[in-house]
Image (tube, rainbow, N blue to C red):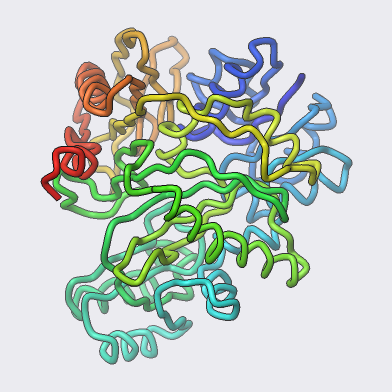
Length: 427
């Protein structure tokens, strides 16, 4: 089987790793890929967000399945262009991907169809946005409506901080066009969960639930990032809770998208807050989360290839095999100095051989012409450890992350601390 995987981050390395585990003989082509994916298949240096380039590569390689990893190609209509040419694609259409590419669109869908979420208003004028902040008060959340690579969200603890965020997004353009419209949103409190629903637009199955760590520093301090680590499973995610999530969030959202004429096929990521009033949606993503994917997929016992192919063909059954292995997986992200504001690149990386049960997924890496592996992004690698106990997985992930060397490397040593506290009975 030949699979074309579009993307080149840690999420795509984890997907490629899982596909190779499912079928060691799979012919994997990654575009553009990364040094980790080069060990699993062939990498072709194209822009995955260019529909013409993606289609030209698909016409050349004739894959049985195209898997679109990141959000940008989906927002650019790459999946539509490929489907028009007859390729089986795992990933939603451009119209359906608005659930991530436009936070206003997603909020309107949820509010119109009774999906529990935070109250919000949206604005294309900074003056109006500031007025909404003053009316709402703090704490309050300011979100760039468009795609901002996971960095367009500010949880402001004061009105001044919120106003500064609005001016930076709308007047200074720190997120480009993504910040031309902003949402001023109610600040929800509770614990966050990442729920992955793999769907054909009607039926869906849930993958193991994860919890990520957005803040840069230990103890959940510092600025928001794209994610500094994650773990799965989460003891809070009981069958009863997931039943509520399926009934009140996932099913009505998929139904709403069908009624709009934009059915959602692919992976619907539900970022949830467990509030005193029940689970509420913080955000939807139209693809696998990063770094949660690196923790979830090593626990998945069934075939991801089969599930993706059924989703792409519109033939997924709610009873599809979605079993998970026993034990736990913990992922620690090792980031470049200056991340998330201004990560430095070009430092040589020393990657020791990981012990059994530990996997290093590449994200912001590249090879120089002389073959030396160097940093090339904010989140450089993620270290996933799978173990029979949660404590052992935490320890193994942390220890191997500490053995990876490059100038200015930074990582959190407390990934999973909330789960450890729950298991110790201290929360």
